[in-house]
Length: 240
Image 1 (tube, rainbow, N blue to C red):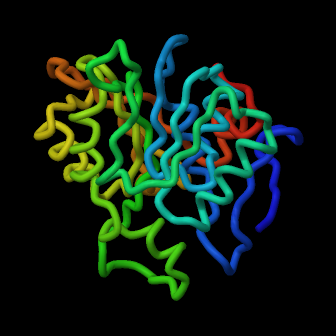
Image 2: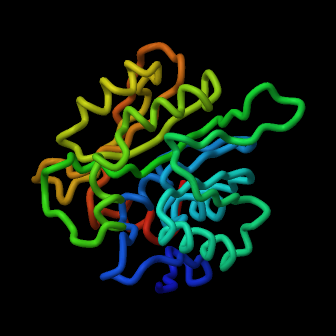
Image 3: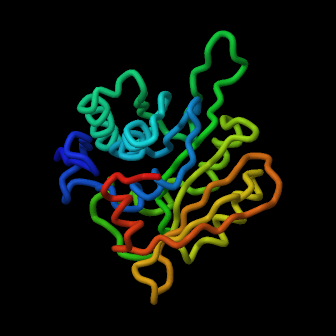
Protein backbone atom coordinates (compact mmCIF):
# COMPACT_ATOMS: atom_id res chain seq x y z
CA UNK A 1 0.00 0.00 0.00
CA UNK A 2 1.00 3.62 -0.42
CA UNK A 3 -0.25 6.80 1.23
CA UNK A 4 -0.73 9.63 -1.25
CA UNK A 5 -1.95 13.20 -0.96
CA UNK A 6 -4.72 14.52 -3.17
CA UNK A 7 -5.30 18.23 -3.84
CA UNK A 8 -3.98 19.21 -0.40
CA UNK A 9 -0.94 17.74 1.42
CA UNK A 10 -3.08 16.83 4.43
CA UNK A 11 -5.84 15.00 2.49
CA UNK A 12 -4.51 11.45 2.46
CA UNK A 13 -5.61 8.50 0.34
CA UNK A 14 -4.42 4.96 0.99
CA UNK A 15 -4.22 2.92 -2.20
CA UNK A 16 -2.49 -0.23 -3.50
CA UNK A 17 0.99 -0.06 -4.95
CA UNK A 18 0.95 0.31 -8.72
CA UNK A 19 1.50 -3.43 -9.29
CA UNK A 20 -0.90 -4.60 -6.60
CA UNK A 21 -4.27 -3.11 -7.52
CA UNK A 22 -6.36 -0.28 -8.92
CA UNK A 23 -5.25 3.31 -8.24
CA UNK A 24 -7.63 6.24 -8.66
CA UNK A 25 -7.34 8.67 -11.55
CA UNK A 26 -8.44 12.17 -12.45
CA UNK A 27 -11.94 10.86 -13.31
CA UNK A 28 -12.71 10.44 -9.61
CA UNK A 29 -11.60 13.98 -8.77
CA UNK A 30 -13.73 15.49 -11.53
CA UNK A 31 -16.72 13.32 -10.60
CA UNK A 32 -16.56 14.54 -6.99
CA UNK A 33 -16.38 18.11 -8.27
CA UNK A 34 -19.25 17.53 -10.73
CA UNK A 35 -21.73 15.93 -8.32
CA UNK A 36 -24.19 18.31 -6.68
CA UNK A 37 -24.28 17.99 -2.90
CA UNK A 38 -26.88 19.45 -0.56
CA UNK A 39 -26.09 20.23 3.06
CA UNK A 40 -28.21 17.43 4.53
CA UNK A 41 -27.58 14.77 1.89
CA UNK A 42 -27.23 11.18 2.96
CA UNK A 43 -24.64 9.84 0.50
CA UNK A 44 -23.73 6.36 -0.65
CA UNK A 45 -20.44 5.84 -2.50
CA UNK A 46 -20.87 2.63 -4.52
CA UNK A 47 -17.69 0.68 -5.23
CA UNK A 48 -15.72 3.14 -3.15
CA UNK A 49 -12.29 1.64 -3.79
CA UNK A 50 -9.69 3.57 -1.81
CA UNK A 51 -12.33 6.06 -0.64
CA UNK A 52 -11.24 8.97 -2.81
CA UNK A 53 -14.79 10.08 -3.74
CA UNK A 54 -15.98 9.91 -0.14
CA UNK A 55 -12.96 11.82 1.17
CA UNK A 56 -13.30 14.54 -1.47
CA UNK A 57 -17.03 14.99 -0.82
CA UNK A 58 -16.32 15.45 2.89
CA UNK A 59 -13.30 17.74 2.51
CA UNK A 60 -14.34 19.77 -0.52
CA UNK A 61 -18.13 19.84 -0.26
CA UNK A 62 -18.85 19.36 3.43
CA UNK A 63 -20.62 15.99 3.27
CA UNK A 64 -21.63 14.87 6.76
CA UNK A 65 -23.10 11.42 6.21
CA UNK A 66 -21.39 9.07 3.74
CA UNK A 67 -21.67 5.29 3.48
CA UNK A 68 -18.78 3.90 1.41
CA UNK A 69 -19.32 0.35 0.10
CA UNK A 70 -16.44 -1.68 -1.33
CA UNK A 71 -16.44 -5.37 -2.26
CA UNK A 72 -12.78 -6.30 -2.63
CA UNK A 73 -10.97 -6.93 0.68
CA UNK A 74 -7.74 -5.37 -0.57
CA UNK A 75 -9.46 -2.16 -1.60
CA UNK A 76 -11.64 -2.14 1.52
CA UNK A 77 -8.48 -2.19 3.65
CA UNK A 78 -7.35 0.94 1.78
CA UNK A 79 -10.77 2.55 2.24
CA UNK A 80 -10.76 1.93 5.99
CA UNK A 81 -7.24 3.34 6.26
CA UNK A 82 -8.23 6.45 4.25
CA UNK A 83 -11.04 7.08 6.73
CA UNK A 84 -8.65 6.62 9.67
CA UNK A 85 -5.87 8.77 8.22
CA UNK A 86 -8.21 11.72 7.74
CA UNK A 87 -10.09 11.23 11.03
CA UNK A 88 -13.37 10.89 9.10
CA UNK A 89 -14.79 8.10 11.29
CA UNK A 90 -17.74 10.29 12.31
CA UNK A 91 -18.77 11.13 8.75
CA UNK A 92 -17.74 8.14 6.57
CA UNK A 93 -18.90 4.60 7.33
CA UNK A 94 -16.86 2.02 5.38
CA UNK A 95 -18.72 -1.20 4.49
CA UNK A 96 -17.13 -4.35 3.04
CA UNK A 97 -19.99 -5.76 0.95
CA UNK A 98 -21.25 -6.63 -2.51
CA UNK A 99 -23.65 -3.85 -3.56
CA UNK A 100 -25.78 -6.48 -5.31
CA UNK A 101 -26.48 -8.10 -1.91
CA UNK A 102 -26.02 -5.19 0.48
CA UNK A 103 -29.05 -4.11 2.50
CA UNK A 104 -28.39 -0.86 4.40
CA UNK A 105 -29.33 -0.74 8.04
CA UNK A 106 -32.24 1.49 8.98
CA UNK A 107 -33.15 3.32 12.15
CA UNK A 108 -36.10 2.04 14.23
CA UNK A 109 -38.11 5.09 13.12
CA UNK A 110 -37.59 4.51 9.40
CA UNK A 111 -39.35 1.94 7.26
CA UNK A 112 -36.38 1.81 4.88
CA UNK A 113 -32.84 3.21 4.81
CA UNK A 114 -32.75 5.79 2.03
CA UNK A 115 -30.02 7.89 0.44
CA UNK A 116 -30.46 11.27 -1.27
CA UNK A 117 -27.26 11.00 -3.36
CA UNK A 118 -25.62 7.92 -4.84
CA UNK A 119 -22.23 8.40 -6.46
CA UNK A 120 -20.14 5.86 -8.33
CA UNK A 121 -17.05 5.66 -10.51
CA UNK A 122 -18.02 2.26 -11.89
CA UNK A 123 -15.95 -0.34 -13.74
CA UNK A 124 -17.12 1.16 -17.02
CA UNK A 125 -14.94 -0.51 -19.63
CA UNK A 126 -16.97 -3.09 -21.53
CA UNK A 127 -16.03 -6.69 -20.82
CA UNK A 128 -13.68 -8.26 -23.40
CA UNK A 129 -12.52 -4.86 -24.72
CA UNK A 130 -9.34 -2.94 -24.07
CA UNK A 131 -6.19 -4.05 -22.30
CA UNK A 132 -6.83 -6.53 -19.52
CA UNK A 133 -4.87 -6.80 -16.30
CA UNK A 134 -3.31 -9.88 -14.78
CA UNK A 135 -4.11 -8.40 -11.37
CA UNK A 136 -7.65 -9.42 -10.35
CA UNK A 137 -8.17 -6.38 -8.09
CA UNK A 138 -7.40 -4.00 -10.96
CA UNK A 139 -9.38 -6.11 -13.45
CA UNK A 140 -12.50 -6.03 -11.26
CA UNK A 141 -12.26 -2.25 -10.85
CA UNK A 142 -11.99 -1.60 -14.58
CA UNK A 143 -14.37 -3.93 -16.44
CA UNK A 144 -18.15 -4.07 -16.17
CA UNK A 145 -18.42 -7.85 -16.14
CA UNK A 146 -17.72 -7.48 -12.39
CA UNK A 147 -20.49 -4.92 -11.77
CA UNK A 148 -22.81 -3.51 -14.43
CA UNK A 149 -24.54 -0.14 -14.49
CA UNK A 150 -27.87 -1.96 -14.50
CA UNK A 151 -26.96 -3.70 -11.23
CA UNK A 152 -25.97 -0.38 -9.67
CA UNK A 153 -29.25 1.18 -10.79
CA UNK A 154 -31.19 -1.76 -9.37
CA UNK A 155 -29.72 -0.97 -5.95
CA UNK A 156 -30.45 2.75 -6.41
CA UNK A 157 -34.10 2.07 -7.25
CA UNK A 158 -34.46 0.34 -3.90
CA UNK A 159 -32.47 2.68 -1.70
CA UNK A 160 -32.36 6.18 -3.23
CA UNK A 161 -35.13 8.64 -2.35
CA UNK A 162 -37.68 9.61 -4.97
CA UNK A 163 -36.21 12.90 -6.17
CA UNK A 164 -32.73 11.76 -5.10
CA UNK A 165 -29.71 11.92 -7.38
CA UNK A 166 -27.31 9.45 -8.95
CA UNK A 167 -23.97 10.76 -10.28
CA UNK A 168 -21.44 8.64 -12.17
CA UNK A 169 -19.00 8.66 -15.06
CA UNK A 170 -18.27 6.43 -18.05
CA UNK A 171 -16.45 6.07 -21.34
CA UNK A 172 -17.75 8.77 -23.69
CA UNK A 173 -18.38 6.30 -26.51
CA UNK A 174 -20.83 4.44 -24.25
CA UNK A 175 -22.91 7.51 -23.37
CA UNK A 176 -26.06 6.26 -25.12
CA UNK A 177 -25.93 3.04 -23.09
CA UNK A 178 -25.69 5.08 -19.89
CA UNK A 179 -28.55 7.41 -20.80
CA UNK A 180 -30.84 4.55 -21.79
CA UNK A 181 -30.06 2.46 -18.72
CA UNK A 182 -30.74 5.36 -16.37
CA UNK A 183 -34.02 6.32 -17.98
CA UNK A 184 -35.21 2.71 -18.06
CA UNK A 185 -34.53 2.48 -14.33
CA UNK A 186 -36.49 5.67 -13.63
CA UNK A 187 -33.45 7.93 -13.20
CA UNK A 188 -33.88 10.85 -15.59
CA UNK A 189 -30.61 12.34 -16.94
CA UNK A 190 -30.44 16.00 -15.86
CA UNK A 191 -26.81 17.18 -16.08
CA UNK A 192 -24.09 16.06 -18.50
CA UNK A 193 -20.45 17.10 -18.93
CA UNK A 194 -17.54 15.76 -20.95
CA UNK A 195 -13.80 15.55 -20.30
CA UNK A 196 -11.68 16.20 -23.41
CA UNK A 197 -7.94 15.47 -23.77
CA UNK A 198 -7.80 18.70 -25.79
CA UNK A 199 -10.21 20.89 -27.75
CA UNK A 200 -9.43 19.23 -31.09
CA UNK A 201 -10.19 15.67 -29.98
CA UNK A 202 -13.27 13.66 -29.09
CA UNK A 203 -14.26 13.51 -25.39
CA UNK A 204 -12.79 10.69 -23.32
CA UNK A 205 -15.19 10.52 -20.33
CA UNK A 206 -18.74 11.67 -19.62
CA UNK A 207 -20.12 12.72 -16.25
CA UNK A 208 -23.86 12.31 -15.72
CA UNK A 209 -26.19 13.22 -12.89
CA UNK A 210 -29.73 11.80 -12.87
CA UNK A 211 -32.76 12.40 -10.66
CA UNK A 212 -35.06 9.58 -9.61
CA UNK A 213 -38.58 10.16 -10.92
CA UNK A 214 -37.88 13.56 -12.55
CA UNK A 215 -39.21 14.86 -15.84
CA UNK A 216 -37.18 15.15 -19.03
CA UNK A 217 -34.80 18.12 -19.22
CA UNK A 218 -31.06 17.63 -19.81
CA UNK A 219 -28.47 20.39 -19.36
CA UNK A 220 -25.16 19.89 -21.19
CA UNK A 221 -22.53 21.79 -19.24
CA UNK A 222 -19.38 23.49 -20.50
CA UNK A 223 -16.67 21.04 -21.61
CA UNK A 224 -13.82 20.20 -19.27
CA UNK A 225 -10.56 20.27 -21.24
CA UNK A 226 -7.38 18.85 -19.79
CA UNK A 227 -4.82 21.51 -18.82
CA UNK A 228 -7.39 24.31 -19.25
CA UNK A 229 -7.75 26.91 -16.44
CA UNK A 230 -10.92 25.15 -15.23
CA UNK A 231 -9.17 21.77 -15.14
CA UNK A 232 -6.20 23.18 -13.23
CA UNK A 233 -8.54 24.89 -10.75
CA UNK A 234 -10.23 21.54 -10.04
CA UNK A 235 -6.89 19.86 -9.37
CA UNK A 236 -5.78 22.72 -7.14
CA UNK A 237 -8.94 22.64 -5.03
CA UNK A 238 -10.44 25.88 -6.34
CA UNK A 239 -13.95 24.46 -6.50
CA UNK A 240 -16.79 26.86 -7.19
